[in-house]
Image (cartoon, rainbow, N blue to C red; front, side, top):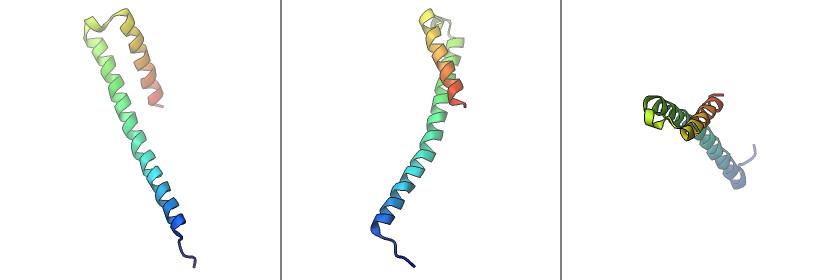
Length: 71
């Protein structure tokens, strides 16, 4: 049986930290992105003052980001 070296243990801890960082960051980021884009779309639909030419561009960006994020 081989003993764990401190280098092996530190590598394991580093990989474990990266694993948890990735697995908790990406779902959180996806949820925030989807909720934010839906809020932009709802605001644009409900408030007539927001329906300007320049805001149509922002709406199209929001829709594109929403569709890409759902993939």
